[in-house]
Image (cartoon, rainbow, N blue to C red; front, side):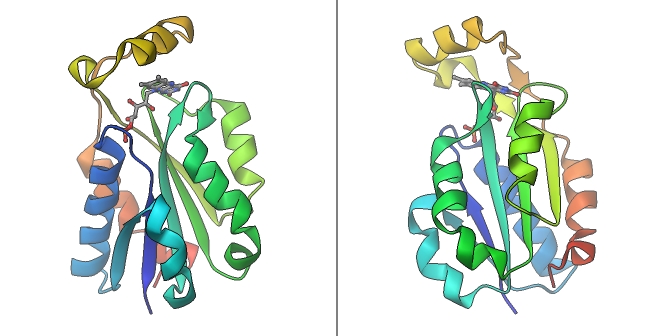
Length: 159
Ligand SMILES: Cc1cc2nc3c(=O)[nH]c(=O)nc-3n(C[C@H](O)[C@H](O)[C@H](O)COP(=O)(O)O)c2cc1C
């Protein structure tokens, strides 16, 4: 039984969340877990017994590459327990984003605040942030909550 965590992470903070979830699954849940960037993840789908897609919200939508993965792999994902973990700067996941993510039929959509480090961003990204009123600079990742959530995943079919 292998769980595949598919991650999209332009600036690395979602990848670190995915790695922490994987560590909890492996060590305290004894679930063999692979973390793969979204570009290389399709090759692992055939060996996966459950899939977690971990991706950030950018300008009001899940990262485009993660959405493309969910769209193009919809048929394969329909046969597997699927969990979506979104991360973002806002305190809550915006309802339209949650609604869109629920449309992929996951067992669960989880949301955790991520990290937004000004020095890592380009000019255009900073401008987009300003325009979308998402300038929540800081590291808001709640590692205790992330680890506690990872321990509940067997309830969502991750074993
Ligand atoms: C250009 C840009 C747009 C963003 N838009 C949103 C948004 O609409 N909603 C939100 O909650 N967070 C938004 N964020 C914050 C990111 O989702 C957050 O910083 C996330 O942790 C980044 O993940 P990463 O380090 O894996 O790239 C945005 C960040 C950037 C750089």
